[in-house]
Image (cartoon, rainbow, N blue to C red; front, side, top):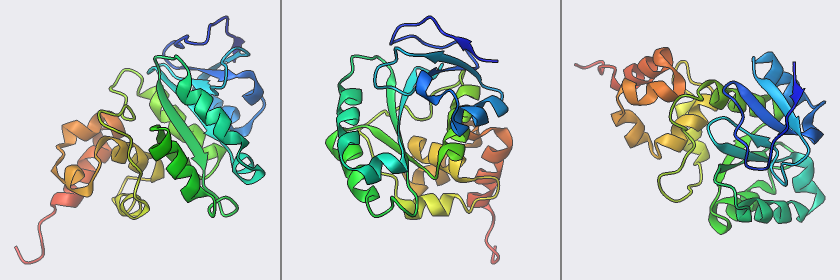
Length: 216
């Protein structure tokens, strides 16, 4: 059951909670978060930000409608980038059949022009899964925190990682934010992947890349 949060713009929610902008109160995204066991705190004073997470990440959500409607979403992104928040800034962008023709331009603006981390999602359901994963991994290292400059996710690499048993789109996105290439992922020990995808999936990924060849 959600409650009204008495917070300021830079407030960090308690473990297991998300602070959400009031405009998301009746959305399918927040309904899915509730179903995933995330507790919601609604606030009118988050500025341009849509969500605050307990791992000190903040999220701006760019929907299919935002992209198709024109370029006004760019002003929100600039304000988001220029905010004085100490949070890790993440941009979730809907990449759908209707918005895909505009998506490369959005990627370029977010990643190369603004230097922000972009995570493509198919819609609010997938976005809620991604957010829930970060919330439930709140005590671990934030897999989306950049150690270097922002990078653009290669859709071919993303598709390849999703072929690994036990890895769906959400886990693949998380892995590719931590390991920037297939080579890095291949060389990663299960203990390095475990904080991101869990013990079982980490072992499956390691086995996938290190299974013996048929001729050995």
